[in-house]
Length: 245
Image 1: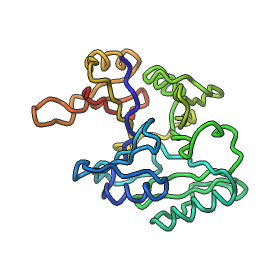
Image 2: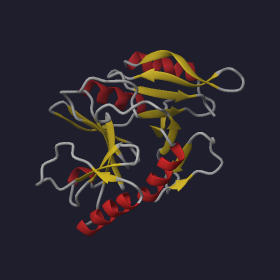
Image 3: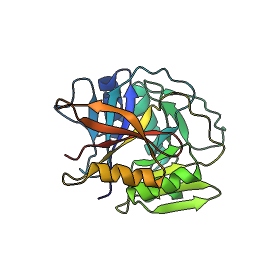
Image 4: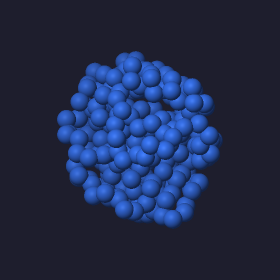
């Protein structure tokens, strides 16, 4: 059985604080009874991925390899989203955007970049408030994730790729070359989940056959087994496969 995208994970110096920021911006509910050292937001419709905030002290070096693109229904809506982000502790940043470009580039309190896209963006018209997770990556990695998640390619041109769940919602995009060298552990990563009756080892083997590699480390739980298997996609980005629950 194929893995599902369970969560987008942020490594954060203060997970609970960052969860409150994104809850305020997105309007997503903070999950109750979560790990005291981590936090999670639940999607408002109960479907799709959640957002998890895990402890991490890695210093930020350069721009993240992935960031959220938030959509806007109107110029007023875009201004409200920007104001809400600033009110909750975000700030404007300059990543080389041109004055004539309509999107607004911000960073959350931990320095993670995100964009508030201008209204009328046709590419994100069939998504939701989180229009895209925009990634720095190769065409190969876009093909890998299309096969890994069994999400169809919705864009494949000039080495840029994008995938989207058959159920719609947020797109995941890769901008193609040049891809900046990876430095350290990514701040954002994918966490995949399997149905309770699935064979995780078989799924790990399938992902390896598609081009992933497996790390020799993982995160343990009380019975000594690995709760999550750490893997790397063809571009070297970390991702995790949960034990079936």
